[in-house]
Image 1: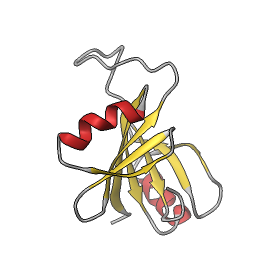
Image 2 (image 1 turned 90 degrees about the vertical axis):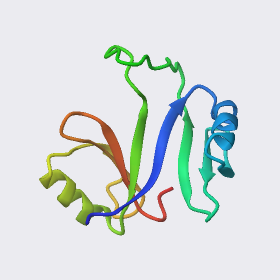
Image 3 (image 1 turned 45 degrees about the vertical axis):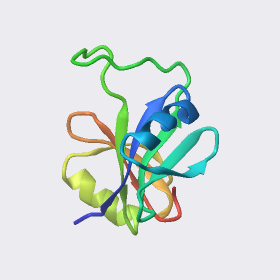
Length: 123
């Protein structure tokens, strides 16, 4: 095991507006709201979904490769350097992030879907 699922991140034009829908749909509550992103948590207090503001957002269209779904997974790890070696060995590609062993790094899976490795200090 490299890490554990921490968050699903959904791109959107206005996190505050979209989160109102998701607070009601699966019965989640706001944990954090910065204006740039909003985090919803479950009844146990675990962060579940993060909504992040994206300038120039274009809504996805189902089954339209020109406008695909826009979300990624955050995987919580204890050491980015160790986890990076493991995901690269599985075929991931580093896209962006900290050169330190804490924080976050962004990768693409073998077919290009983005995901992040994050440490507890990163989110």
